Length: 498
Image 1 (cartoon, one colour):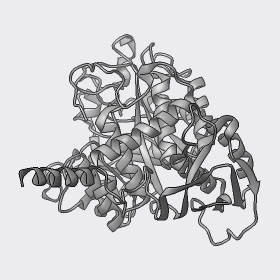
Image 2 (cartoon, rainbow, N blue to C red):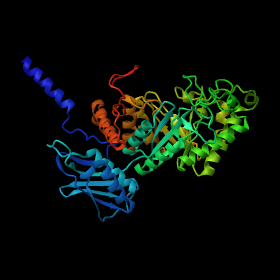
Image 3 (cartoon, rainbow, N blue to C red):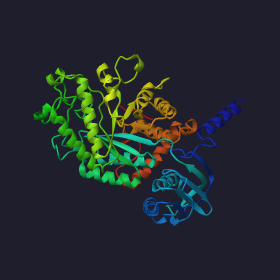
């Protein structure tokens, strides 16, 4: 009897680990799909129906890159795409091959990314001798307009790290990546502004911008114009500008240099020059992020003497108007715009004052508010609705608390805001990066993604392992540190294994 009981436990364990109807290793999960787990056909041809004449050439080039000499042939087919949305696509795979239907090049990109995630090498050979894909029918399009990831570029970061994150975001059908400099940017208009060791050169920015355009994701630059003026986090105590070049102290508040000095007219001149330079290096995108989070009370006597809320709002308005004059829309963090101590925002990230909040109505309504919630799930997300009801477009911004991310995005769908900007901060690797990418990509695309099965830790990890490997092949990486979820097999402490 005991032996039978143990066998039953073993059987239940196998079923639990290998469910018979597990969702395929796709990210994001499509809206509608019927994908065989056992019936595979040769992946030798792709017929493309698309109104965009550039789609066929893009497909040929990338299929050759991904599959080498066994790349599927591309045929141009005819069909009706008039009623489709720009990011929508359909896939049909049968014994005749794969057929992709889309209105735009972006839809074709997304379809071919999905097929790449499904394709595997032909079985039973020593080396790759062809590719196979499962029989499938897929109808897919995103639910959210703005699906973004926020990437910090620190002094320590290598270019390959940033490129890998951009590539993975595009592969996961995110359409925007905010790239924030933390002392890494090498400016020509202000060469002193940042660490000498930073790898974020204008040349590299332009290269990454061209790469992102090709992959179907738009890069957005970020320059903090209020708090975080040190281009470092408060815990490190560093200041990328004045630690090495103290002669530039008048640009910054005396206390730690944490805020820009808003009463100094030179501050706006410098910020506008930096914004223009970065905006042009990033190829004049539709958005520019101006930061504005976590500022502290002023210590400059000129700032203290004035109404600081008036200075702040006037500064944001002038910078936002300048961004608009360049052809872009302003993004900014939310926390200085809601009052610390107001019971409506209990438990939220509120850093503003009564005076700051009172002047909120003076801000242009074309500013997009990036509202960050970094903690556990809540019963309500009141600031999302607050800013929306004031006439602002809003992005919900989760971080590394997985249950909080899932709940926040569900509420963002319910409230009906513009989209989501997932934030990475220092999480370039490990379980945090896996969860942030996986959940933001899935739930901004498909609010009903089957996380009970699809979101299991092991499946989630194996899925991202596979896709990071695809990205590594595209980058022609060779260094073992450049592959996988962690950089090293023997980790540097502190370490949280998955």
